[in-house]
Image 1 (cartoon, rainbow, N blue to C red):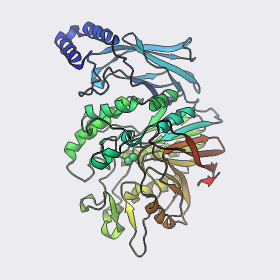
Image 2: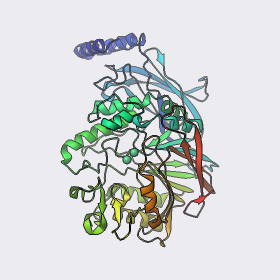
Image 3: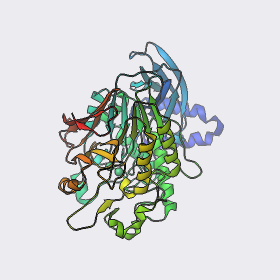
Image 4: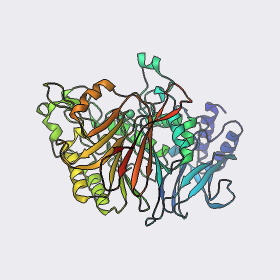
Length: 524
Ligand code: FE
Ligand code: CA
């Protein structure tokens, strides 16, 4: 069916008013003849001991300009959760209406399941069946858990390359996948960069709900990413490119008028919710949408998933210009040091510290978007410079965080970060200005799935002034594979052979161990 026919039926459904439902059903059936309704696959996430979220989004024409996937009207969708891969033992099932107000995205919060075990799920609509996905409940809160395998991703720029790293993540059969931001990029390459693009978006820069929806839809047509989502539940937080490069709270990158930007941000957030298998959340009266959460994994681990974009203060000294957020010296920018500035927002800070104080898990994993350990750019004779888009732009907020870790003493805090398109192994210091101060957390920064890394030589020349950064490499693409056991966490830096090869091979760059009770990673 062509898009104009779909539009006609949409108008008919609208004119039909209260009797729209049968027309819609007819439409759904009519579609079945010539379009597969599940081109975007399935996903699951936000696991709990008794269930998880299962997700799909129906579409006939996934990149339709209106962002509605070539469908109109509600479409009845059946979901099933089974205890076995062959769907012989269905343990939960139901019907939902896929609604055009959510672009026919379906989120089911499944409950009543048993803890700590795998389940399989699938959807049916318009006489068609979705692919099946594998999900898992978390162990019971008091359960002793021997092992947890994580796969951790960030920064998948469609134009920068193929998502073979996502495929390799799926092959590792993780218990849980973490997405730490820049799951999409809002812009499209232009000029010389466009000529170098491995594959094009074929979409305009996303600024509207339809634009953001279509970016997510395009990503979800990728076979490797579909396979990863179908292989394990995930926890997802966003970074800047889910909305706009380097934005900060309600302020766009260059510190302009927040009002039009808030509309754009709301569109990006709504599309994120619709596209991700996360529990119900919505824009509130302040046009905010909460995505931070605690997820417990038996006695072994607690995940504190953080939002480092939405609530933060305006970027330091953005009006003074500088190289897109990188500023020169404290002398030139006293604003950076203002203790009234916040990175997580004061509400999220309090929520986090309360969670850390309460946690009795063996490992406290902070999943978040931006590098937490400090990075001093210190060249001969010059004053120290900082990149202000990361925690380095908010040193007072970082001091509150490191003081909380030092005084609340949650067991084994490990920070997992994205954004920087490079691997880093860091000691997070109680006082980022003092290398001799105590290490209060271990940090692993994962490189990008595809996005190009920052200049290697330039960054390496800064490393002698940063001995708390034990390893850095921006030349490789890939992800982190982590095995958590009660006594040890093993982190592997997994790299792909190249972004231009859709069947890139995998190698382990190096491996790190964190021992129970001893912050700071050691080469394993
Ligand atoms: Fe990125
Ligand atoms: Ca980013």
